[in-house]
Length: 223
Image (cartoon, rainbow, N blue to C red; front, side, top):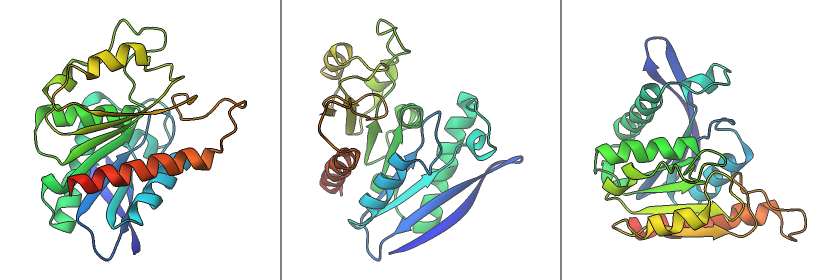
């Protein structure tokens, strides 16, 4: 196993950082994008990144340009999509893998833009979503869902039962309409960041381990 840091050029004015955990042997590549409020070094992404790479899966995490620059407001949709594309291109150039060996994943916003990219090109092994932001807070009647209907890659969703950006009563019936049918893994008592209520006697580490293990098993089914 080795860890490499690579700078990826997104535009003439924007370079981003990325961290690659590279096993000696691997059959699959997982790329992880961060959410709107925390960068690639968040506890959640770092734990998932490290845990999955230990199972012979090359894992790459990266920052979007606004986060790299220390800004709070996310980039425009065009730049977010372009960043995803440039990171994928860098992975293919360095590893020589085909897109059918690459699994896209992301936390909240980062995952949503992975699905937007996949809705335009049926090219990848699969997509993993860690807390999909189905709707704005308090607006479950306005789901951001239609583009998912044209995705043909397998999808795995991790959602908490207290996620204010994804009411499961709204989400589950929508998932039933998709083909292939996605896998929905529910974390009881978790919010959008997969944090649990204090009264739930379960450690944060055990939640991260569960998400990591389920992801590994799902990825291995695709390789």
